[in-house]
Image 1 (spheres, rainbow, N blue to C red):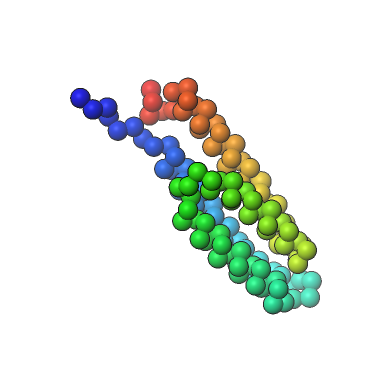
Image 2 (tube, rainbow, N blue to C red):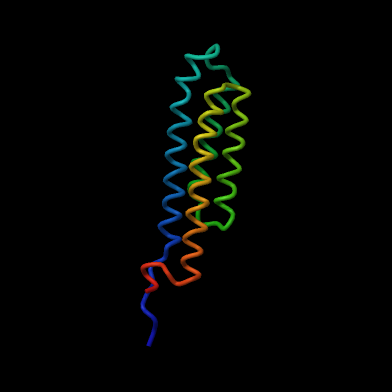
Length: 124
């Protein structure tokens, strides 16, 4: 007799991470008009940086099944924060999303802890 299929908590977690990245892509692209109004407008550097970040984040959203994905996502927030040297508003977006990704990392560790103890709803 085979064991019944247990729900995979990591499948939904990967979906949350991919969805967060897509949301971040939207916010980064919405920063284009904000940057164009403040601090001297869009420059080739600022628009290239924002569009490049949006492309990288969109590509990363398809790689959330990898074991290293969460840590790359957090690392990308530091790259986004460095955008404050181009425009302060870019750095603010990076700080906000860094906090979101730290919360996601905490939730991941909590799910892992509960899974190891057999406390997830599908394990009872």
